[in-house]
Amino acid sequence: MTYHFTNEFHELDKNLYQEYLSKFFNKFHRHIAYGTAGFRDDAQYLEHVCLRVGVFMGLFAKVDNHKVLGIQITASHNPIRDNGIKVSDFDGSMIRPELEKQLEVFVLDPNLDNAVAELVKILTGIKGFDNKNQGMVFVGQDTRPSCPKLVHLIEQGLKSVGTLVRKTGEVTTPMLHHNVWFFNCFPHNLSRSSWTEQFTASYFNTYWTFFNEFMTELGFKKKNDDHILLDLSNGVGGVRIGPFKEALQKYYNLDIINDTEHRLLNEQCGAEFVHKAQDYPVHSIEKLKSYPDISKVRVVSYDGDSDRIVYFLPRSDFKQIDLLDGDKMISLFALYFKKALEKLQTKVEAVNKTGLLNVDLKPSEWVIGMVQTPYANGSSTIYLRDQLKLTTFFSPNGVKNLHPNAHKYDIGIYCESNGHGTFLVKEKKTAELEKYYHLRSEDFKGTPENLQVLKEFLHDVKQLYRFIRVQNQCVGDSITNMLCIEAALATLNMTGQDYLNLYTDLKCKNSKVTIRDKSKLKMSYAEDVVLEPKEIQEKINAIVAKHPGARAFIRPSGTEDIVRIYAESSDSAQVDAVTNEIKEMILADKSIN
Ligand SMILES: CC(=O)N[C@H]1[C@@H](OP(=O)(O)O)O[C@H](CO)[C@@H](O)[C@@H]1O
Image 1 (cartoon, protein in one colour):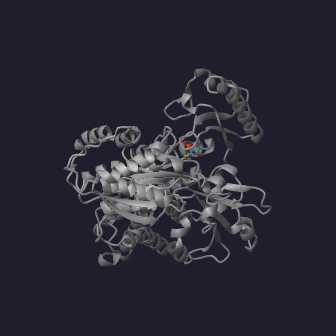
Image 2: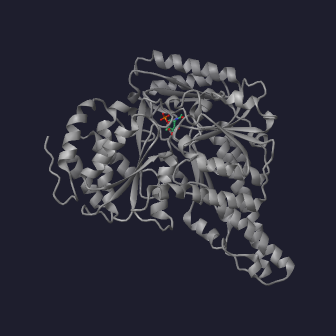
Image 3: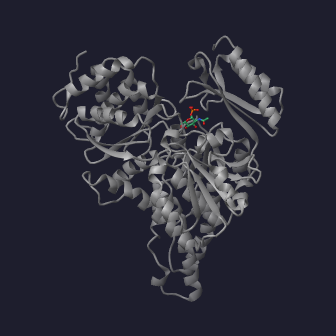
């Protein structure tokens, strides 16, 4: 194989690339796709992929000489032997769709010259691209043993095209995305040569500052018998929770389990386990038994890289849990925003009558859009659409699909049922609120009644602004979602039980089955109808028709070599029956086996 990078590429090291490529390409013996959340596989098959992703991102980084891109090595909820690669665009969100497709082509092309030439053609069409630029990429990792080697290969790929690398060490995936967003999009005093820990510290400083202000303004006081028990899935969250753990004691009695045994990553613990098994994570029961009043406890589980979160309420017999999943979380956020906007509208009208301020905010016109996947519990959609009267939209699975759909609304709230999601508020809307953030009623002159109206308006507008700033809007983030859930519950004066009672979940089951070739299944846009082979969907329809009130679908997983089966109904026996019948039908079907 020969490589003809042009000399124009800054500090190009062809030999370095050649050496690594010959060593690792032969291990690359199977098709690898950019799945639901980036590349993911058994770590031993990712060496070549890392090298290629490094070259790709190194070239993409040359679009901007002053900004940075990000790469995170993690396989999130997967077993410890797996690993994966997630990539961040300049705005801190997942890489733009056109380049995501190209990245897959780039990794699979056996001819590197070809791959580079094609990529450069595309990058040339992006404003700012200049192959003499020296880009920079932040590279983070989770706690898996395979990470150091894969990070090293990413680094070699980046360096081979002359791009600068800043290794941020063990960080959660949302922290990596935050660091990129913060450096590129938020006002700060850092430069590319600042200490890595200064970027990382910005994460705590940004979100904690706004949360702390929010809770202080609310007058929230710690209650002695309320406890939060945090399960960190033995993942990278355990490495980075420290400052939050300490600071949060101001408002909550917070205990942490499953934070340091990294070799037991995701085993019987964490958000994926709790969501799928609907069971207590390991070590939680002993801890729960030590609390005086279990009805006052909320258990919170993060996944391995801390981008997903679920809550649950324990029961006194420790046999079942009451799950508060991603659908419940966004229902709470929707309720918070709906009430906050309604209240703010009345405050705007009142303050405008005082003549002290001329406020041009129109909160009642802001559009809140809810984006869910077909895995969303049917009851949540009914609550959001019929009770809260909000727009609901169904997107394919995977944050990369939900996120852009949520961008269409003034406030776009999205989440996968498993707890992966966030809310997005248009920058223009956030700026409209920010205008009032530094105003103080003490600096105005007027009657006491008018000043009181002004004070109340400023309180509400600032609280809404702070709430928005507590959220990491790049990707789903367990830490910031937890802060937002707690801030919303405190504002709405809701207990864990009130949160659970927002609506009653239908019974549901997520199961998996392995077939010979999952790629034979061609799916509809939202991935809940099998388009090909047609007969499979007909058979599913026939099974579901036998169980009135049930809903079920199958879809090939984008992160594992399996097909997922989802079934829901108000009757759990029916859920089991539908699941089993679909499972048997799939295993017996010759067209996919
Ligand atoms: C049903 C389900 O839980 N699917 C998960 C899972 O994707 P699959 O493509 O279904 O394997 O992993 C993704 C990445 O973590 C997550 O975004 C998604 O929600």
